[in-house]
Structure formats: C-alpha cells, structure tokens
Image (cartoon, rainbow, N blue to C red; front, side, top):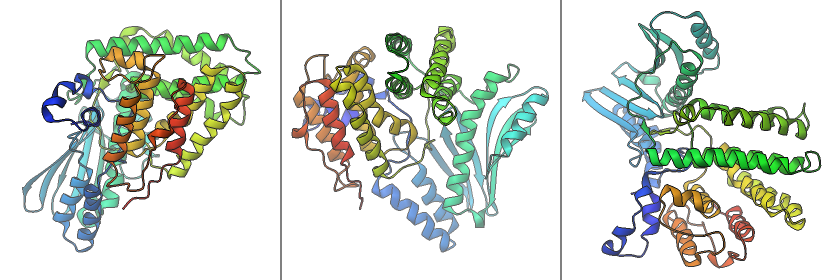
Amino acid sequence: MGFLDKLFNLNKTAEEAAPQIPAQSLIKMGRYSDNNKTLAKTQRWYDAEDLFKEKKYNESIEAFFDYLRDEEEDNVRLIKKGENQYTFEIYQGTKIVQGEINEHEVTAHVSLAGMEKGLIPVMRRLLELNYALFYSRYALHETRLCMLFDTMREGATPNKLYYGLKELAVKADKQDDLLLSDFATLKAIDDSHVIPFSDAEKEVKYKYFTFWIESTLKRIEELNQDSFSGGIAYLFLSLIYKLDFLITPEGRLLHEIEKINIQYWINKDEKTTVERNQMMKDSFQKLLQWDKTEVLKYFYRAKSTFSTNVPKQHTVIADCIKGSCENMLWYKDNKVPDIAIHILEYGLSYCQYSYSLPRPVTELFTLLMQISYYAFFEELGFQQKYYNGSDFMIPEIKRTVSGIVSLYKEKYPLLNFDVERLNFSSLLEFSTSFMRQIEEFNFESK
C-alpha cells in the first residue's frame, strides 16, 4: 500500500476505508529516493558491515541485498543457487543489472543497446565516458554494448558493493537513452519491464507539459526583462522543477530539461541573469516544437533502486526555504503574487530536484503541489480534494499533514508539524505557513 492510500484511510475501519483508496495510487510524483529506509532496513546495513568484518561473507551479502531491496518497488532480487553461489537482479529505470556471486568474486553487467557492427563514433563516446567511471567500465560483448563491474569477494565490502553497483545502474540507465537518441543504428534491448503511462495519463501530462511551458513564456513576455530579471529566473527554474516532479519525463526529454537547468547555473559567473534567462527561453521554445509523439515516447514508469541525488543535512533545505520566503516578499508587497508564489515554491522544489530528501518532506511537498495544482491532479483522477481555487478543505489538509508526520515518528521522533499554525487566508499565505514549518523540522533519528 502506498503512502497516499495510508493517509486517505487514517482512523477508518477497513470497511469504511476500502472504497476511498484512490485508483491513481500507482501514479507517483517525483524521482525515486533511497533516503527512505526504515529503522529495520538501516540495521541491515550495519549487519552487513559487521558480518563482513567477521568474514561471514554469505550472511553479509544477504544482509546487503536485503538493505537494498525496497518491497514497495520490488526492485532487487537475490537468489541463492548453492553454497557460496548467488544470482541477483537490480532494477534501475530502463535497465536491469544482472549479476553472479561465487566463492571468488562478484560480477555484474547491464546491456545498454544492440549494435550490429562496430561504429567508431559510438566506441569513441564510450571510451571517453570510461574516464569518468570509478568502479565500472563500458564494454562490447558480441553485438551488445554493456557496462561491467567486478570485485573479489573478499574485497566486496558493503560500501564498495553499494557504490560500485550504484555507478553501474545509474550510469547505464542514463546512457542507454542518450546513446539510442544520438546513434540511430543502435537498438533498444532489455527494456520490456518498462511500463508506459496509460493513454489517459499521457494525455493529461502532455496537456500540462505544454500548458505550463506556454503560460510561463507568455507571462515572461509581459514583464520587463531587466527590472524583473530575478523574478523571470525564478519562473523558469520553478517550471523546470515542476515539470520534473509532476510530469516525471525520462530519457532524452529529461536530458533536455536538465540541460536547461544547467544553462542557468553553469553560466552564472560569465553571463548576466538577463542573458541566462534568454538562453532558457530559447530552449523552452525549442522544446515546444517537439512532435507530440516524440514527447510521449519518454512518458513511462520503471522501478529504481538508487537515487540519482545525494542526501543533505536538513539545514541546507531549511536555508533554501528561508531564502525563498524572504526573496518573495518584494513581489508580495508589490502586488505580484503569481511570481511570489513561484519563488516560494522554488525553495522546496529546488531541493526536491537536487537532493535525496527524507520521505516525509517529499510527501508533504507532494501534498503542497496537489493543493497548488489541484486541476492537474483532478484530471489525473485523484479523488481526494484539498483546494478548488478559492476554498481549502481544511480538515482534510490537517488530517493528511498529521498522518504523514505520524507515519515517520518512529524514525524521526522529534518531527513535528503544528497544523494549527497553517494560514488558510490565501494560497500564498498557506504555502508560506506550510513551508515555514518544514523549515523548522528536526530530523534527529534514533
């Protein structure tokens, strides 16, 4: 059962709750994060380390893969074949890492694409990419482009296994789509486990994908490009992070959106904000020219095991929220509430995009987005209503917030959210009061 199912059914009997489990519970927002382990799962990591030090290699391997496995995702499988013999599978997006363990070594491989004959540009690309790898390597096996990882069993510490398998899985998941889009002669392989969005979900997400880009570009055209350059930058950045979280594109489409984000940050010292805004504007206009069928190719859902981002101390997230709350005040005071609320949203959406956040923060952010973009969620089929553009469903919001926090009290006993401090006078005031409490979170764990 997903967290939305749990939250919608708090304090109800099974008979009362069953009809209210939303059919959309499989629609997940945002990217997978492995920064959500239970206390029991975290203990399995320590078990794996202790067992390895005791040279109980089988038990250490089993504890490690138990730590990796997310039962909700069904993303990791370890099968014992005999004494000191195992096979395993690790799911990461469009790729499945397959491996074997024997008494001497741990080996893993993943297929990227099919290549009928050697292509010098492809081989040159992989040779260059090899230099950025620490644990794995690219290779050609018969007619398949692959990535490989191996280590001696006696050197296969949990730490080395984690980072080696993560590099293998994450890099393969990213590179296969890029290789296929850049080299037309390559063939997709081993991606039958990927589940495309339903036709209905595709249509809704495509509608809002184009609508949010078009409406942002239109709003920016109404503003003075110099005096509002900071506000324009916030509009573009919050658009990027909103598309990533709510639309969750994959493959080449995701890569293009990531490139737009990089355009802003990587040129910060060389180009003015106005210049960087123009670069982002041009890139979004090009994105709108994509054929609909090309966009829909990258609307799919797949299991993951590793987060592509790393965790950060909550002080980093708190500083981002604090900064956005302060930076939006000028726009609020000068009666530009639409820009103010995007600046406010940026504070947490930037963190969601850039870092691996604790599960309660992601779930609260999802709730905030469901309130802010209620029409999008309703068209996706979400049954629970929190806001309709003018009125808040206050009891439902308070109940859901309290439910999210209570689900994680065991792991984070000092986590607290006072729902009585929420301000429901407007969407801007609500979002401010909501984010201010996340800023104050205490994630000290047991």
